[in-house]
Amino acid sequence: MSSDLSPAALAFRAGHAAISVAFLGAIGHIWWCGLTGRRSRLLRVEVAALATEGVLVGANGGDCPLGPLQERLGDPIPLFELVLPPRAAKLAVPVLGGVAATGIALLARRA
Image (tube, rainbow, N blue to C red; front, top):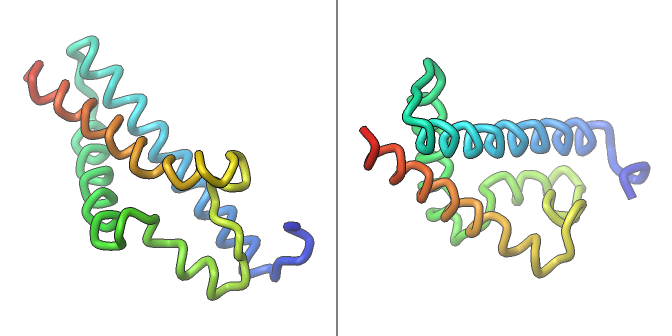
């Protein structure tokens, strides 16, 4: 339960959630640009951020690189398990990575 977490763990969870929401927004924006052919100032930053995240996730065996730090702060529940069942949460990062990669490929194809 979140009330059992330290202030540092709660702050980290909130920051981690904000990063996740930003990445989800970036994926949506990349797909929108890929489907409409429009471009924005943020597009390159979003693609670079998602590509960097993909490299870090790959280097971490398919898991979010922030997970170990989260555990060290005393938060044993992976972020996606707060909103998804454990099996779906474990699949969320690779599935979202595939969705992001497909959106980036769509962008490249339309360029």
